[in-house]
Length: 69
Ligand SMILES: [Cu+2]
Image (cartoon, rainbow, N blue to C red; front, top):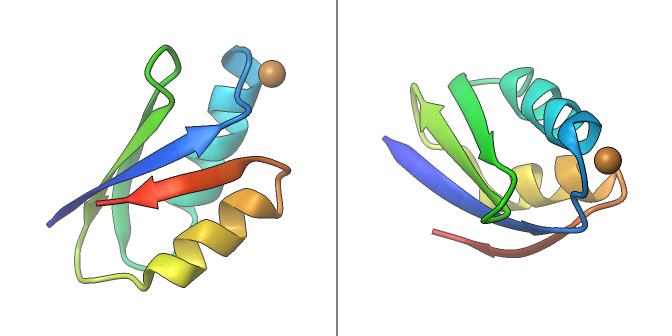
C-alpha cells in the first residue's frame, strides 16, 4: 500500500534526503520518495504503518506534517 505525507518546512535537497532516510528506516517501509516542490513524501509500505509514527519521526527532524493520506 501507499501513503502520501504532506510536509511543510523542507527547503533544499538536504532536507529532502533527511526526510527520505528517516522514513526509509521506519519498520515496514519499502521505499520513501520526496517531491520537494510539492512537499509530499510518498511511502511504499509492506504493511500498514500508524500515521502517528510517521508524523512523529518527521516532526523530530523539525518539519511539520499537515496531512497523511
Ligand atoms: Cu534544507
